[in-house]
Image (cartoon, rainbow, N blue to C red; front, side, top):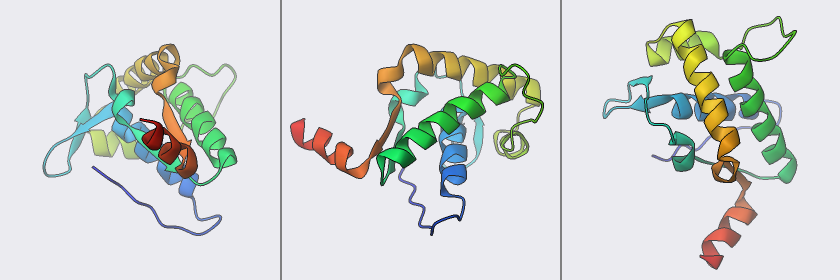
Amino acid sequence: MLNIHKASAGSGKTYTLTYNYIKLLLGAGDEQGNYRLASDRKRHRAILAITFTNKATDEMKARILHELAVLASMVRGWKKGSPYMGDLEKELGATRPHIARAAGEALRRLLFDFDFFQVSTIDSFFQKVLRT
């Protein structure tokens, strides 16, 4: 599946891309586009996010890791909930505790298998393709 988001500066691209990455990481979609919590432990290996700049890549990686930690209630002293929780509940048809548990597991898998956390620029993606 290929998702393309066209947007101007300040329109919430990083928010949207992060949400979609987390939804793909935690959920599995069927032919009708309905998602549910997934049990696949290596979903991050099948997701590639591409941005324009290194700064955007770094920001998106940091935001994904942070939001997974917030969803899993792993950030000490963090009082606010994740802005993604409500939408994830609806789209994945799961409860907050189930999403929190899945986010914690996904975060651990992502950190232990960090080489496959693929958020890159268009340039680095095409360089990798050409080298391969």
